[in-house]
Length: 260
Image (cartoon, rainbow, N blue to C red):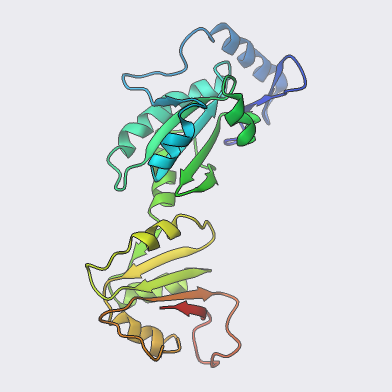
């Protein structure tokens, strides 16, 4: 995947490779030659480099960790070499993330099974593996931008503490899922995992079960007959497409369905 228009492209049908960019071809050709001259130098830089994965241990690491950001690179690629130290720096910062986020590198030129499995044709290609789903990285090339992108993807569940925050969240969300949990101790792990699987849905939660009354009254969510806010969670999905059964005075965002 091209990161900000700058990448090395692998052509499996020829003996060489091409450098693609929006700038002058001659300039990139020079950069390519420099890469070849420097290819004997290790790609990884810094005091503590990101762990390297191969076809032998890749699946095991992905299965063992809920969130792994993987950089597929080519040792001869100029842009891979430029991204590598930023990737290493980002790893140090993301070590403190809760839950932990692992960063890893894969030399796609020697791990052909992984290259083919994940359709790697450009270097560097970065993918985010989370709970069985793969997200294409579309962030920047600096360590700060990498950390920011991961935090946005990993922390997709917004915590709502009061009515004002609920109203603001719903007014700014095109498609959203809101969960009201009965208490602070309720297990929310499944909801958190689900929130990382969807790029086009925003998630929010509240441990203030009184907000469920607002959903029933202000937002016209039908009240389930057996719902008990002190023991059961309430999950409602909102969509900008509206609900034909809702009254005209209701909010523009109407619940499509609810799960209790």
